[in-house]
Length: 116
Image 1 (cartoon, rainbow, N blue to C red):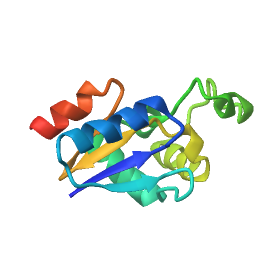
Image 2: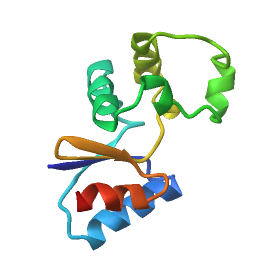
Image 3: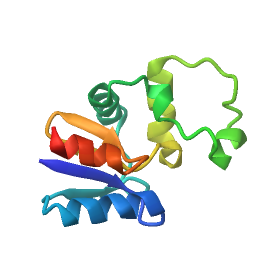
Image 4: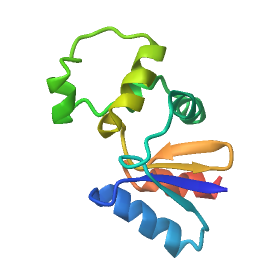
């Protein structure tokens, strides 16, 4: 089972979809801005990625500044809640393949995931 957390407006996200299609991988698309993952789902994703929730945050995103998150120390639970409430802050694209996941920046990380 393969799922991509996708933003069609993002070049890297579109490249990830193209890579999956070129490899003949059947996958589900979650347009996470329209259908945001829950805190629980995000927790599972960061666990598969092997990172802390804060590492999934797009800190250069305008909204990050607007929410005055720079320099704040939040717990993992607080970061997951923030990401669930503000999915625009979620790093993209994320591909979940089996029990592992990769952030597709660069796209080669997805290729590596598929090759494991």
